[in-house]
Length: 586
Ligand code: WTA
Image (cartoon, rainbow, N blue to C red; front, side, top):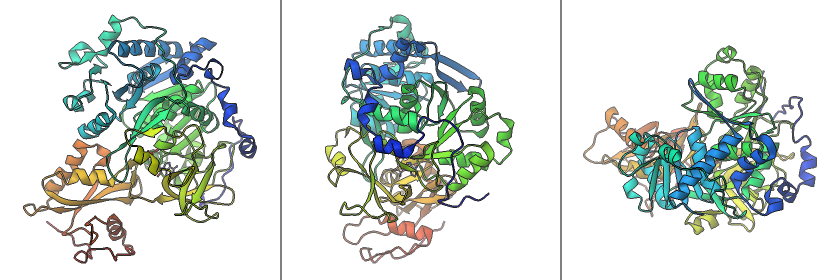
């Protein structure tokens, strides 16, 4: 079967929370959604109360909240146990002076401790700062310094990567482990839990406008920026969990993302738990066998992942999944990068499910453009605007473009999930809103006559590799810190598996000659300071880089055109000395 780009794929016949998209759009009102929450009546707001505690008070304490699987290790926690554990960890945080608004960083692998540590912070009104487990020293330091982290929860393995003495605001380091795993100055969280009694009323009430979580996201210029979300986002997150992820009472829900990324927190914790589902946590790295076995073992019904993961599973061939019983799966979703029609075709043929693409960003706090399980999918399209969300394609003057024309993908800034601020950076925050009332995403897209949106790329130089946004600026800055690298220009190079890979063009200092050992050393330099996903998979040594004549800025656009054998377009600004790609060969 071949799926043509844009051809309709009809839904599989099942009952879904949202059956009639058009009707939902016409009658939509965010205020109606507010009635779901306890604060609608009490006026007392806390995200974790809505995710955990209320389920216990409403009689669901024995329902399974977490099913953790890591190889042969399995752990299960009910909602009552999770309420107690988050109360307990929050009690320890309070003992160490954490108050409303303080920043608590969590640097742990995907395991129950990580989820509990995040929720415990939010429970007492602190701002949780979860960090992706793949980060290395500098990525960690940038974020904790910017945010003024006061407390860190980590373990004895990841904790070694944190340059604690360079973060002056950091008062307490809790190790999710035993005292013998702690270094000088660190405190064993497990011992603290044994020695304190959980305060069952530790919760701190706040308002819908209070910040509760901060996620850092890379930009094409400068250091990563801290996107702060407010509790009000729960309205958006609850409803998209219900209508897009189609979470129901008895669902077993698995989101493969780490909670350090926004997908892993919003659709890994809040959306499923606001809807009272069982959350599956998979510890360990990607490997096709263990992924399929998670679905079988936990009986996963809803699975949220990313195109690169689906492509990796496809690359395993068509036999592997036959070894597993995947019949529990009823709904599959994707995010983070363009979902190719080929992956949708594979899922229908091999797994008997459609993959539902979703589009949103760290800054948007929740889904904005989606495919619903009850609606037709057009392969190649990210779907349609969620009810209550106004999406438009605007030109450079902020005027709406007609259907079919490519322009800036923008969203009306009038919905509850949108970020509260960029931490310590009001100018950056303002830069997202150049046209009155509109949030500008930085993505380019077009809309068809039925409202389906088709992604066309970024309008800056941001690289999207395996769904992770990578800043060329950050990689270039790191590259030139290596003594052998005089200049660096970094681009995204198209890649069949990862969407794009990081490709670096460098000029070596006068004393250095290219060799594969040197290039590997340079690659590892980036990997060991930032993270594996930032490290260039290809490095090419050139005699000179294309730069602008006046400011000497490296023209990534020209590098990209050279790489893709395309016309570099307007090169009138190009410094006349560098007109072609001249490689230096060892
Ligand atoms: C890209 C992830 C194509 C896009 C939730 C966006 C996508 C950036 C899709 C945000 C999609 C996200 N199709 N591209 N369905 N979803 N993107 O902040 O360029 O990590 O601006 O948030 O990922 O990445 P972020």
